[in-house]
Image (cartoon, rainbow, N blue to C red; front, side, top):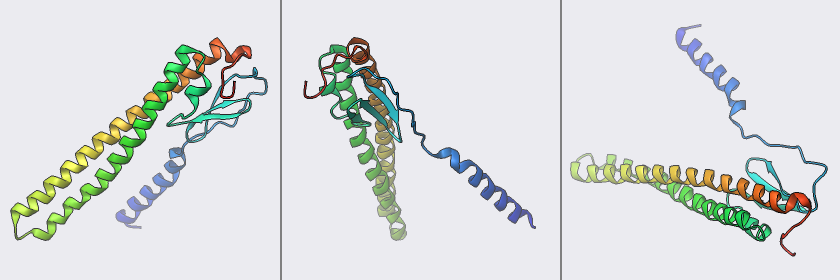
Length: 173
C-alpha cells in the first residue's frame, strides 16, 4: 500500500467513524404525569412544545405558542419574541442561502479573461453576494438561538404561573 492510498484510507475511516456523531438528536421521553394544561419541551431535530392534548408549537417559528400562554404576561411576552425571532431566522437564513448560491455566479467572470474589467466586476459582485449571504446566514442562526431561548422561557413562565397547577389559558379556553 502506498502512502497516498494509506492517507486516503485513513481519511475515509475518519469520516465513517465521525459521521454518526454529526446527526441531530431527539428525545423520546414523554412524562407520564402532567397537570391538565402543563407544557413540556421535546426535541426531535427541532424544539417542540407539547401540552397533554397535543403539540402546541414547534421551532423555529413557534406559531401558536403566544396564543396558548396568553394569560401569563411574562410567558406571552417571551412567546411573542420567540415567534418574531423565529420568523426572522427563517427569512434571513433563506435570503443568505440564496445570496451565497447566487454569489457563485461571480465565477462567470472566468469567461471574460480577455477583458479584465468585466472579469473583475463579476468576481467583485460574486464575492460581495457571498459575504452578504454569509452574514445573513450567521444572523439567522443567532435569531434561531434567540427564538429557542424565548420559547423555553415562555414555557417555564407559563408552567410556573399556571400550567403546573392545572390552570390554563390555552387555545379554546
